[in-house]
Length: 208
Image (tube, rainbow, N blue to C red; front, side):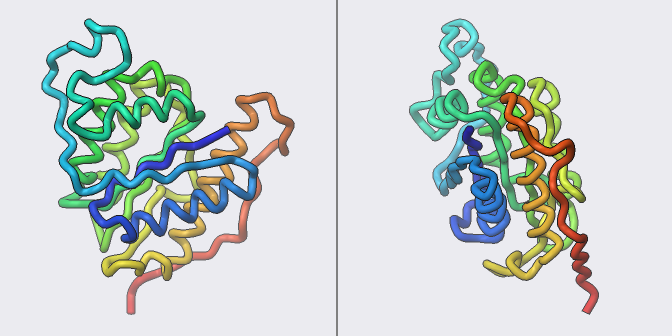
């Protein structure tokens, strides 16, 4: 089993990467492979509603050669679950990640349907719940079981690397990974415990 993890931040080693790496490390403890793909700094174009992907019937966007979209659709054909990670800009996910998600769902939906999915958002202070909800909505339309955690899948940090100090945020990522591993094994008929494992809660507050 393998999970595709997409980092939609323009900063390759920023706080979104810190959160996603925590998920990948925890998945590995359950013998679940993962691949963290950085979306990069190159533009990802939005869908222009041309309908060519449906007409061609090949699960490819006709504009895919211009960006990473078709490569991600192809990877999803080989993966069993998806995690999308994004920083929060003005209460919204990064534009390039949102464009990618929309085109993956529309052109390559056959490679996504019925596969567990989760969204992760990282912010300095606010707006994360709105961005988190935005990323989750397409999953529901694609019949993708949404993997939950002990809290919304949110971590905090401003300067690069600060998320490593958000103990509760990182625990939320590990709990997410535990739940995803448990769900994947259940779906694949692998015998597991009746419930996923839990860590003692480690709350982190930010008033200083």
